[in-house]
Image (cartoon, rainbow, N blue to C red; front, side, top):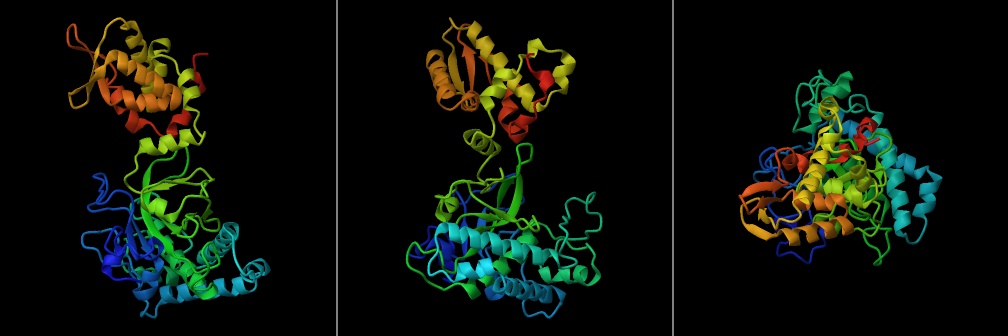
Length: 419
């Protein structure tokens, strides 16, 4: 491992491979999200740093990254980690499929995926066998987890729950990922060689503790999350999914470097991971691009506001109301076809003529689908030069479309269709 300078992506130590760095920033340098706690950043931390001294490198101001393991403490938590480790090692040594895999002289990427999937499942199962560590709980959701008293920076504090089989200390995505990540890294370091020829996946690789955004389903929310990422395959390990943690990236050509530079991880089970710099708009676009959301079909089936009753409109999801508003704006512009309206940016500057706007909108709708056209239209307002009045888009209902849109768009109810 390198010194402090080698921790930061883009430092003078560019000859240090990204997968060998201790800590890396994901996406744009210095990005902070105002909706998140102070100084929340997308970072990945090499699990070897947790094995070295129990904690990630201390970076001034990063408040969330404070959880650590006191390896010198002889308590129920460190003994539980040793139990998970020793049981995992024993199962690997007695597993004929894993032993056959280890006996091969070299590995393809498929071999590596097989290894990661099998080992991460074993680690997850052994983790779930520890009373006090077998149940997820979050301090923030007091209604669902009323027994949780606090979030611990020193993860050894979980000993009280292990000793008493209670749920008083938070054990959520952060601590779950750290527990399983250190075991996975111990497996790598013990069972695989330190080096291999280029292109050979049979080599000890680094797992990284990762914090960013996640979305697990079409109707799920976009949230802050912690998980594990393999630098060898760029596949994710979801430590909160006890017994079934491994997630395969639908793009096997995506590299760890691609993720560090800001690309999103889209998994075969429809879950998506990214840095904090990605928005709900980005997540929705991915679901459209992968064909998971047929946005054009949804748009076509959505009625105009004038075609349904007030009661039906008010009971529609916000996403459906936004689509109705958009379709209504399109109709209004078609009625003003003869007027060469000015296209004004949200900050007031003239962007283009009405005719050019129409051509751009049509091209976006044809090439990128209705959603791309909607995103473009939401960033401008259209002004009738005859009386300087607003003529289309950027309406009060439509202005929140991008924020409201997302996975839940698929929850449109059949009663809102034109039929």
